[in-house]
Length: 352
Image 1 (tube, rainbow, N blue to C red):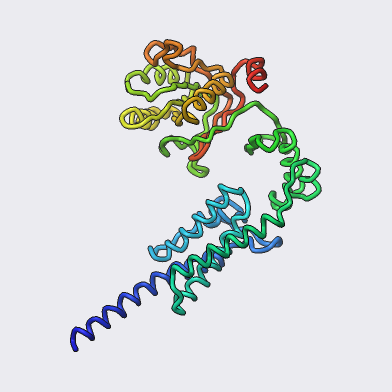
Image 2 (image 1 turned 180 degrees about the vertical axis):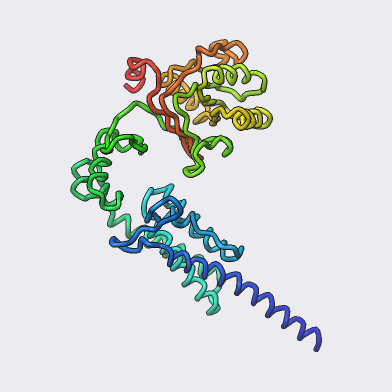
């Protein structure tokens, strides 16, 4: 009799804990939804410390709870917002509202006794059905006239017509595969400038290289660029380039197969002790594709690729072989190089 009572009490305790574990994230997601201003086209803005915004992903990132269980729900919303922002660049508010609704209805179903795996399969089937319906209703646009007429860019710019038209013009100039970056201007008017540049799908190898804590990016102005096609094995071989960049008071961007261990530690310590801006990224691509990407970079930035094919090593290469660019912005996922110092004629020939 005693063992039966104990078993029932233990069962109730475990069930109670699981119920609390479900309720706390749901409660946190509901609180987060109440903090969201952008639920309609006439929504209000939110002031977060020094920022004024109504962007869903920005609002989500700023919210944290003291209770660990509640943070599970908040982090779930943040993951959805970040994934949507990375995939589409817009629609983060819609995605987070849907997440909270699915979580709320899911908890109701589990409390009513629905099997969790059956519920998961049902959600996946519903998602597939909705996606199929949206793809049938989607209207693909390709011309600048359609972008203007449908006000796609204006809507994405929070109904700011001037910004929307500027984005539409930028899309027309660079094409669908081009890269559009937004920089803080020093004049009273918005300006559009088309420059030669390149975007790599590689980010920094260590977050310690970040120079802007707010945006989590490493921004280098007029850096020296070192490209090495192999993994750096000799830590002392980098000292020459670090000293050269330091004497010229220039930042240094290192692109190689992979940087880790003592070499990476030395760069991080050098950055923090000397205040010199340094960043390292992994060379983009694999095999022959990597070689072609490094050649593109070399032509754009005027750098000599350090490779054994040219009988060059880090020991015998000269500082004059390094390239440069007006600005390099490195994030966790990608790198944008603008205004490379390479020969214009060679760049045009390479593009053709």
